Length: 541
Image 1 (cartoon, rainbow, N blue to C red):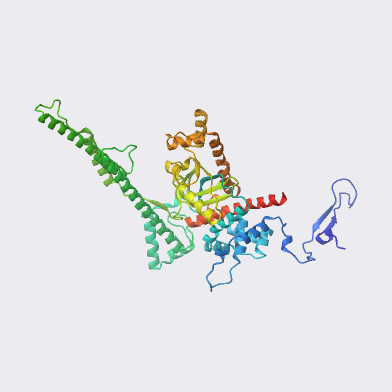
Image 2: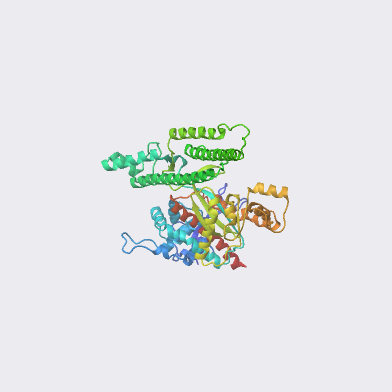
């Protein structure tokens, strides 16, 4: 009979200091040594490589439950060798994301050395280029799996909608801050590439194809077409922003002139931009002119009334209107400054034109504003990625996204209470149709200080309370304070897990749609891990 030691290794005696092989005090003198040339006596089974309770088997089972119809849509008669099974590739990516691994090269290496990855691939070894192409080709389908995974969580009873929290976090793009350029610089680079293409310049062709450094010495990604396309996209972004800014300025100026014609002068700080300052000066001049005309009309009416009564109007005749004269001087100076000022120099990132400059607690980052809605069991219910650095305009779109996602996952229930921080506060968000909500009107530390200074409130808000006062009244009630206290531990821990535990602080692919797909797939992996915890706890209960 072959023993375990005979099959796996051999026992070797260690010679002691006196030449003996046994006896004496001290540690054991025998070792079990590996027999690396030993042939297996029985056929190898992959199911023996990892335990039945391993995450890899669970991911394989879950992928079998997901709706993968969109992954199998491939044009008939496509050239090349047969592709890898989409179900296997999806399981491979999902398991890698569950482990916090997103690099295609690291995934390729794990398929050769890691037992769990080899089990998922069945011994196949897709290279990093194949994995990357799969992600690019099935961008929309991979992002859409989030809804199918949410349906599995709902079937397990994890989608509790009694209280949900909304928040956003800034995710870095695969682009650097110093790659933001103005339209003039981008235009010169586009002209260089077009001229080189027309002339067939070999040096430019080699540089563009190999991704050589540009004038600033920073290496560019490979591909002339890709570089030219990104530059043209950056120009389009700048033009679109200019058009949007011009439309907004025209609308603001029109509203200001309409108010000025009624004699209402604008309040607030005067803008520093020459064009905006000119529009403000015109509005102020119109308001001063309206006041002067009204004053003249009142004076003329008094003179006419005195003449009709056969008496002379007393007092001094009014002199020049000082406010109107000052407004005319300000308008003339603003017109001169606007003519002398150069045109607005918009800027865009030439590496990822869709990304925007975002402000974080640690400084500025080139990236996106990633949004998520989470329930108290830390199941992500809806997610999206925006180019808007401010959260206030994203509340109602995210509530609509939540409604659409729940409907797509066949979840008929609706959220009872939505929690959001002060970044989402506005009267429009507080009064918009939708579920009940608690939105902080100020920062958390100010909210707590106000609660200590003003004390606790009771009952519903007064009938004559304004929208901010009514919300602050609700937040200082016992129930409102207890409900809002759940916000940070509900949503902030989810972002901390993605960024700190799994090192997912940035997107790996460029473009808004690619960022949306990757953000959804991140949360799909996290929901799968929560589902595994629930099923394991249920099975052992």
